[in-house]
Image (cartoon, rainbow, N blue to C red):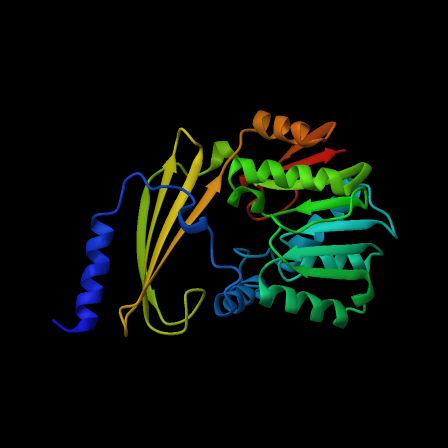
Length: 290
């Protein structure tokens, strides 16, 4: 047996012997957002207008931004905070409408694009992008009028980390400031066990021939969805293993968590308040006021 065959055999045998059910947040439990090559490939997905899997298409973002402007109560000159801002597609648009926006993300490709995009749109002076982990970044207290935490990104953190993040945002907001959080509706999350595979030589997982093995498991007691990905380079038999965990929340639990974090009022909007988004029915939006 060649070295490549032996490595491939070892990978498959390890998959066969894997623990069941899976442990959430293994090795951090998230995609390698800050690995330069992966970050660059993910950026392409964010900017791809043929789908909304990474960032929503521009027509849907426009609907959201108009809705957010109203619900957040922002105005020209207001200070905004965009957590996990990605390539700045929301931040730059709010800056174009007159806000001063701070965006945080630890993808180097996304932050580089956000800075360049702000420059192209003529709002570089109104945008401040930080390439940092939202868990460790610090903000001056009572400095922001509004904050965003969109597209379910709060869910990729453990409950204790999520609460710490909400407390951090509450401290950073001015009295009366508002936070919008978008989370998947726990009642609609896929709770069926599923597995799949495919091969390709381009896309998010690389630009060489690869085999993708995926498995999704619902941990009912913890209310966590765990996706396990194994990506095997078909030329070298090198394998990358990723554990992607998403903590879901029932509406009463998130309402209480926001209040525990320092927010005094919470409004809940199912299906994005009936906006015409292709996946609106999957989401719940929380608008919390300090």
